[in-house]
Length: 589
Image (tube, rainbow, N blue to C red; front, side):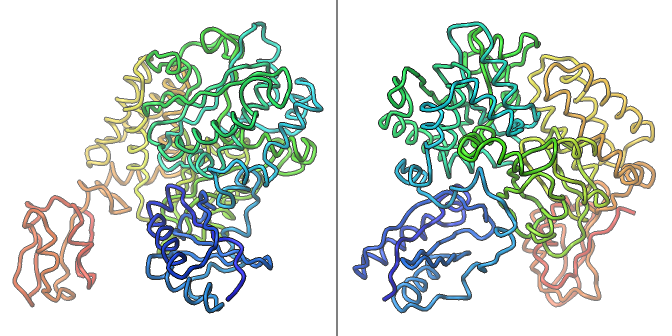
């Protein structure tokens, strides 16, 4: 029998959703039944969500084997074949040089999927809290801030403001009471960076918060996390309790005169609460609505006290920066965008999941070299960056660098890190409609242009996707977009038109096809397409008849069927059910 050191099972939300809990329980039972006393470590997500459930076998000689796409049957085979008989099951192994993992550079996510996120001892073994010890033992607050300035770290929440400069503002603000807030209100569709880090390495974020609090002189902190993240909240609670027991949080931290306590505040899922002034209002028990700035939070924030707000990834960068030194960190990335960036790679992509890459890498490398290209080998069409506040970048700009300035120049933004890939079947007009629908619904209603202007834009987009658009709608969309950006109070309204503006800029011909020819080139918009049966291909198997919820598909077995266009609701269930590609999607002509 081989000498196994430990087994790691990915139990992040993605793994659990894919069946990792059953894999974990089966593994425990199999080992117990065989009398094998091997530690089984639950971890967060290693980033390869597309291969979940994942199991890593670590041998005492240092060898490692990563198994992917497991289920109950496969994990039993791994126990018998590999752990008992000593023969790795190559058909289930993730390749040792797997481009998805090998081409990343992990700083923030270095521990995620590697340590038990509910064990402070595992975190300490991975150099955890050494940065805090260094700060408390050898550095003045101003020296910590200077180190962050040297590193060039910019806020990873979207705005990209220099972190060291932000800390300096709060540090120099007058006031005995100061707060430090972690913004974990991750609300962008397709984004799961913060959730993954909080689930996989919560102590890293806590350590970053404590270091930040020491630097700015705060004695109290809040982690504002959306209630839809129950696993992240659970692991944060465990980590905070463990850190308090070990003296990393609370009174006289590490024997010093420094005091700092952390509270968890669960948000109710309002997207606008990702904006820092709305977030603070929510913490104070008020309705989450933004306010005019100045005063900025660094001067007057929570309960009118100086407050510093950073997002999860920003704080996760702090401990490694202190450990390696700001100068060393600044060697990574580009001149104005230092370090790495975590992205949630989602959409029509072969290898979706969490990726951490150095700033300066191209979009093409991320999507094709790391992500493996487009699912089903379809043609790439666009990538949406920055969530509802971002923009859609076309194929001709795929070689643009991933850094703050380069992405902003395209009309998109870095955002917090959502990266949604779209293929040729995506209608760009409908994508603009979808994201504007999201921001319009999430508008707090305080600003007239955001509340009413986004509603008017949405009405126009809905009309265009229904084949009722007019050419003057394009000019009206652009005029409304400019006014909304100028007149809105907070970032939600100021950036809400971005998906519309970028799709108008790069995919104007699709808007014109919808308006002039009443045609959706992507064959997506229901009002502009129809489903028909190709009688030369149809075998009369009746699967489509059974799938149709409104009896629009008609015919008898072994004879070509037809679809009654008057009854058809264009749900697409017949198209999905057909095994012979007999059902075609055509324009409504």
